[in-house]
Image 1 (cartoon, rainbow, N blue to C red):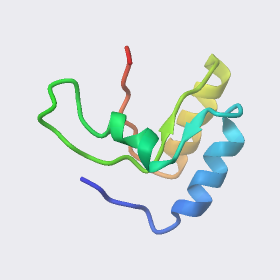
Image 2: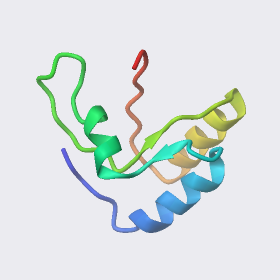
Image 3: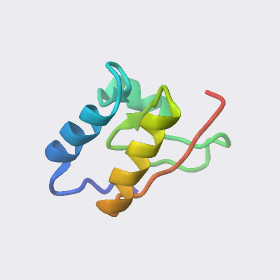
Amino acid sequence: MNAVPPNSASLIAALTGVLSDGGLLTEAEDLVRYSRDWSGDHFGRPLAVARPSSVEEMSALMRHCHAERIPVVPQGGL
């Protein structure tokens, strides 16, 4: 699934405002690493990858995504 929301630029701006500097990856070369699951069987290019640095950032990020009905796929250990 590679669905891009119609308001992706405003979404990126909003999420950038929630996270610390460098906390949101949006460049294609950064996103490649996050395009497959651990098995390598499932592919889906993300619009962005959020890397919150605190519980407060994580909470703000999830509140925003919930309010805007933006799907979130958690991933850990990378």
